[in-house]
Length: 251
Image (cartoon, rainbow, N blue to C red; front, side, top):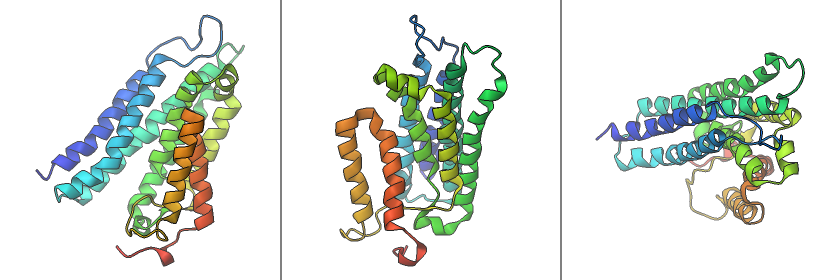
């Protein structure tokens, strides 16, 4: 019974591996009209990353349910996150750069290399989290799952968006900027609010409730575009409330 939470955590890894398989499957990166298009594999891969995120969110609950929290479980969680929210989103960025640069005369494979910066930053972030016990109160840098899900939303936004949105998402400048900005936010020491509820008072959870409200409103009015908007709101709300160890609630 004690291994059930660990097996549940491994589902995160399984979904991440399946996502990579679909993201990298050979498919044309253009519609018949010549417009840059999202492959079926990208969309399916994004769906499996969403499943991985759901499992990642619930595995702690399962561990507490079976009273089987352990150091082994913590390590498995980080290793699975490295694949599902580091490597897999990095492959999405790689495919987006392939599409963005496709058809360019004399294109070098080096222009695709910046995509690997993202998984490197994700693994760095996870290693830092494992070594820093203060991050049970708040996060230093954007959590890897939040960053990975933001990237996973890009193909879905392009697919359901207008032609202008599609062109923007596949523009190499947008991809490079996303890689740099999100990677820096992951490895930074910027204090980011934790979404764990330790107290159940309005004052103690004002930051979380505000973020939830923004997320709901963004989903209603902007649909899939809400994901990167909530990501930005997550950073801004954290800057406003400035979480730190001094006002952290007791464990």
